Every structure is written in C-alpha cells, then in structure tokens.
Image (cartoon, rainbow, N blue to C red; front, side, top):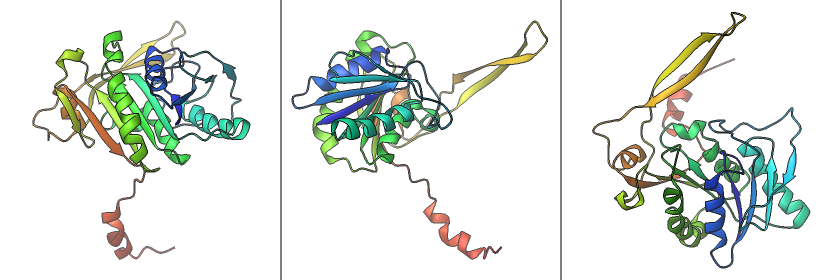
Length: 259
C-alpha cells in the first residue's frame, strides 16, 4: 500500500516521525512524506494561489521519499499526490495526517491543518486518516502509544474506507496506562474562553495576541468526541465533506425565490 504522510506541525515534528515509522513497519507499506517546512497549525484548508511553493528534499526515517513544502498542509497533500503520480507513476492509496500535537475535535476540525491535510486527500479521491493527541506538549510515550492503533487502522480500516470518508482519531491527553478505551463517535461541541490582548508597539500601533482556554462541558452524550476526550477515551469519528443541509431543501424551494 502506498501511503502519503503529512501534518500541520511541520516536517520536523516528532509526531510525523512516529507516524511515518509506525506505518513503514507494516509489511507491504511504502510511505511517502509531503509536509510543511514549518509550523502551520490552525491554518484551515487554504491553498497557495499567488505564491511560489518551494520544495526541498528531506530525510524522514521509514519514508522512501520525503519533501518539505513552503505552503499549507493542503498544498502538501495535493502536491504529493499529483507529483508522485506524474513523476514516479505512484498511486497513493491513503493519506495519513499527524500525529498532531493538540486535539482536533468538534468545531476544531474546521480550523485544523491536520484535518485539512486529510480532507485534501478526499478531494483528490483518496481516503484519509487524521491522528491527534489532545495536548500541545505530548510526551514521547504518548506519541509512541499511538503506534498500535495506527497500524491497526492501516490494516483493518483503510481497505474498507470509501473515497469520501476520513477517519478523525483523537487520543486523550493522559498517560497511556490511563486511557480507558476507544469509542466510535460523532462531532461534539468545542468552545474556548477566548481573549484578545490588545497592546501597543513603540510607535503607538495596536496589535494583539489571541489565546483561549478550553471549556469543559458537563452532561454530554457518550457518543461525542468531546465527551470521549474529556473522559479519557480515544475517539474515532468518520467525517465527510458534504456540508449540504438536506433537511432544508424543500423549505428553500417553498420560498419561491426569484431574480
């Protein structure tokens, strides 16, 4: 199986190296890496239309081919899939994105560069998996603990994924021996107590720092990814990109809009 690995933390991130090594250890896997040349967290699904993308050869243990790209996670996946097909005749079977340093649950998926890299796989006709750990400072032990599930997904889940679906996998921010199990979930709520600290530079111009503290929810359904993360469970959420509100279709028709 030909696997393209990407992320939004940058090609130097330890999470990407653990992910690449885990997938490369499965017999029959060929792993290729196309990842940003630096930090791109929370950049969403942007692509570079007016900028030149700089491509550099890199070495990532376990990868048969690795490149860093000066663009977004979506740029990296699009480039990887298209370039490998055109220049090397390699068809990518699945995209893996991560392991992200920080959780991607609920509304985070709309901002996440990690999920956007996986989503770009779907847009290119390739199923995808996004993997995250719910802390921005995961220990080596936390990252290595993702290995078995990543390998299990590559063997059991990937052959059964359609080309419109990505799996969004989130490990809770706890020690490996404190993980309580795994739940198949849906997206739950995700909110932050947000703050914009407005300051002035020496010239009197205003600027600000954005920060946010995660809100802890009470009484959530067990099948939400938010509750799984809060309760110490791994969440596996199948996602699709079709945002159509089908239930509204007939109501909109009933408005008899005209021009």
